[in-house]
Length: 331
Image (tube, rainbow, N blue to C red):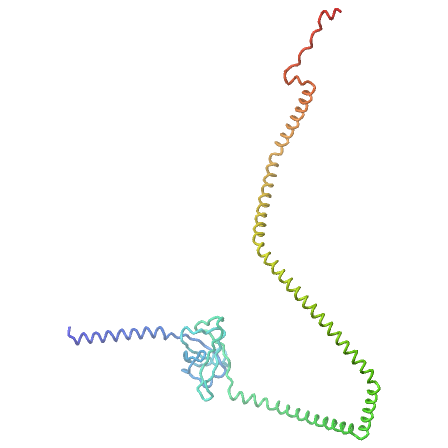
């Protein structure tokens, strides 16, 4: 094979490999997930308009059409990149990056704990507010604003009238007759103060002594509070020590109680077994007790017999009575 053919075959093989790699990468990164959403007004967007997720470009609008189930709604079909965390809390809205920029479909990031939406699901939407809607709402608010201004004007007129009344009252209070009355009232107050100055001094001294006593009482109360705080700290330390001691003995005590409970369970089982054995051998036990009683009676009789005739322990039979001598009988 010539050098030119080898070079041509190498170039063709390299191109095929590059094409395969591009197709594979496109399959990996070109996955599109369809979704849909619904609006009542979609002005400013068309098929091919951008779709953003949290501000990032992630896809485009594929179709805009009337929704056959509800003619008042516009169905918007879109496709986004695979792997996006579109969830149940995500919201679709029509917006733009600037007042003069093109509109696009924005999908909010939603919540991380919300359930992920499967492909083909419906994304909840928020209707955009157009300039016409704003103008319509403003025109609806104008009569309310006008009535509010009229109420404010009425309140201002009422306040103006009230202010005039107050000024007239002040002017009447500052008349010469009222000034003379005020002068007489001040003179009487001065005379009263001159007469009662000694009593006022006495009252002030009493108040001063009372304040001194109150200061001493407050100092004593503060000392008492300090003592109470010290006692509370000591009690708190005691409680802490008791709590520590309880914590230290709790596990051994729990172990001992567990062992005691196990021992009582075994004792209860043993008593139950003993009751079973006694119940099963009740007649045998009665016979045994009767034999014991008879044996006890025989032993008691034997004991009495031994006391009366102790020689029976050495002989099996009592010795015969001795014969009376003949000579003694003759005499």
